Image 1: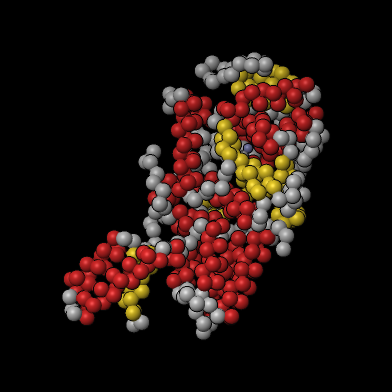
Image 2: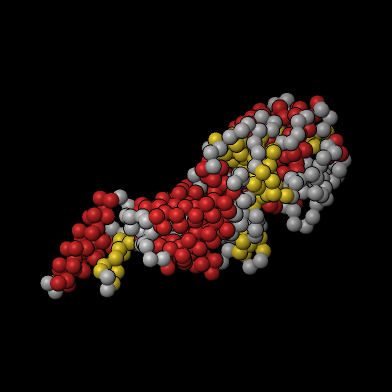
Length: 467
Ligand SMILES: [Zn+2]
């Protein structure tokens, strides 16, 4: 089945097309690095990690770029509060962000592009806008003239500012021609970082950073632009206005995808409302696979509530899959192969349908339920299915991931322990159990013999520095 995606631009589900067959140039708005990232960011980036992984799984050659907003009002304000150097502050929180993504297993981004490294391209794009009559100058810098771009509002279906918009990013000046006009280049202010070039001393506005970067990487048009839903207006409208005006080519991106927000007790998780949990704190409370499962078990477009119950449900669901994996044997029957093949078809059909991860996981649980009731135990076809799913989701700790040598050593230790138990040497038997526990192996004595599995991890493998 061909892949379809829900496109924000048309507000419909449509076939996923690309400018060059088999090639995807993909851009997702990255973080503004002035503080630690929170779990709301983790949701967005984990869901786009799945998108990039699935596009690659489907045979596309994907170049996935993210910008790093490291020149921005928020960074300057924060640095002033802390009496810190804005450059050092941004570098520190970019490192923290990158560490957080590694800890979350988000490994699909190819290019992290900093605004700070693209100042020349930013200046060049503002000059193009000036030459084409889309920008005007006020005493504090250059502004985009929204009246010069008739298609403004085509992504969001509106041109007016609403209470839910992030107003801290709106540039205020009484001389603006239209209330929504935004800064392209901000003239130097005392105590702020600045660059000197054709536009005079100053620094870029927020929106222009992204289009200068994507123009440098991909040119004026590319395939897929993503971000969280609260960036549609005004940020993504501004990107469209800038790039399509500067290049004279439309559309900027063939497809637009937006993720729903993470909520806490019904309100958007955000730095400004103070209801946030940092990714680091979340990973101290639960493991990264449970966090990934929490995000990926919901549709990317829906808003998700973040709370202990959601994490517990995710952990329980993960365990059901991991317990099923432990029942997998080394032999298949015609029936176990055909049920695994049917499950595979159902699973991937859901992903082809606008990355419907909850539908795909429901198909997996249908398969697990049916297989648990069937007479023949699952075999290698089931193991391969779970491994392929986990390549995309990275949500399950599969015992089959352990090497056969290690499994043989564990089996040998368990036989030795059984011998000690028969000889009533419980001290020696317990020592073997404790040794295995220290290696991360949990054992359980059942009427059918002793079973073992990797102890579910409390934390991710990646170590995070403390601050
Ligand atoms: Zn952006």
